[in-house]
Image (cartoon, rainbow, N blue to C red; front, side, top):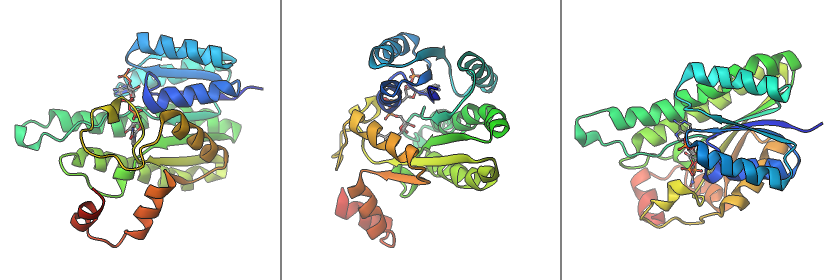
Length: 247
Ligand SMILES: NC(=O)c1ccc[n+]([C@@H]2O[C@H](COP(=O)([O-])OP(=O)(O)OC[C@H]3O[C@@H](n4cnc5c(N)ncnc54)[C@H](OP(=O)(O)O)[C@@H]3O)[C@@H](O)[C@H]2O)c1
């Protein structure tokens, strides 16, 4: 029987590449994002790559009710859920000097509330079946603060912590929690970066590695390996010195 996989933020970048990777294994997919035209294109690619079925949902993850309705719809259409990947995210700057909290609040509502809105509606079905995999896309930014992007770093730390907590709470129901912490991956998000991006990974390559980590039941998966090594080797280094050496 094909895997039933639901992915948020699948209209571009990592989410789209993950959808295509699961499509190649013949999965039944639920893909969601706000830009429906982009989603239709990704759905077509998934079908051509071998997906058993693809359901598309125009969804803003900051909308709690719509997220819950979408989860219900997908569970009914696919006849269950095996993997939910909360991938949708934004990396806006804090704009702390603007005097308005609008932009940083958008980061928190997408990257934190968007994750809780997306995952929690699937949990009762996973509990009932005593199986399921929950995947949260965090970031290496969850380990070190980034200047002007404090909201982004904080949001990614928050969701990594959620994964660590939920792993303990859901273990008895055989529900697996994986937090993925990517370094730099080619996507619309990184296209905007004007600074050097060491060890930048191609999107497809990153998605392949992520799927393998999920298959292997990794708890926290940091990629690429060079970034993981640097993070571990420098964990006691003060942040200003860390940035001086590596950026
Ligand atoms: N690329 C990297 O180097 C990198 C590194 C670490 C972590 N990440 C994380 O990886 C995830 C994917 O990012 P990406 O790099 O693939 O960037 P991306 O190409 O910009 O993709 C972001 C996705 O999130 C969706 N999204 C944004 N706001 C949304 C909302 N309110 N409701 C629903 N969907 C929303 C976007 O779709 P719509 O605009 O169509 O809604 C898009 O599909 C993010 O969580 C990001 O923080 C990326």
